[in-house]
Length: 256
Image 1 (cartoon, rainbow, N blue to C red):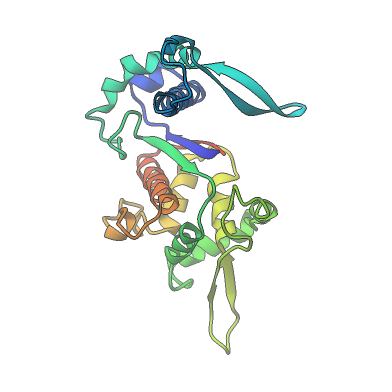
Image 2: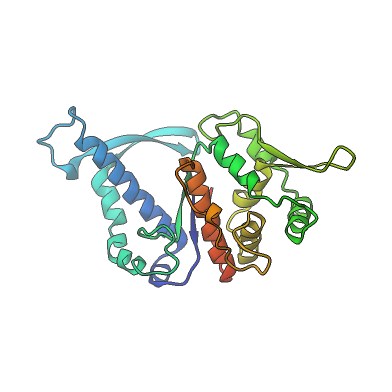
């Protein structure tokens, strides 16, 4: 399970397919590639059977709950075939942040780690009286980003490592304290549907990926490093994409 996203930059790929179709094809390709690699290294697979006839069983969520279905790898590869022709357009694309096919998008895989949520909180402004801090608290209050939907799912370990949301507090012993949880930031990032350009820009600004002029901020803390786990790296890519999209007046397609 994952949160999938693509920035809506104009390109030959977008002219050919909608975000939904692109995501469907890339999921088919990634699933086929993953299963093929597993089966090729599985001694129980009949080596005499051609790969075109290989199949596997998976569980999908249907209207009546989880259902098991059999899928053929060849069908997935056929579904994803148009990607092969489009991929070369991504090679020199300035929006290809992941340096991969269709690298203006990506996925944030569950479970989201505690380290990743703590990283999100560390990126919020140290002083809420600044322009960035005031916009952040105003957005949380005006749009009711309370994080309750995220917190309701924390009993599912396959979704969130932490059963309680990490939080950050501002204020002193003698002043009013402000409390923001990582659930609230995840709420405004992934629970509002596709992100419009302004929304993408604000989220990136709140987390320090854009400066006060809403321009891209060249900060080494925004880049992956050896101390980051996979969840943190994937979130860094997402907010980098949101920053680039928002700064260019583009939105982000999100399927959570």
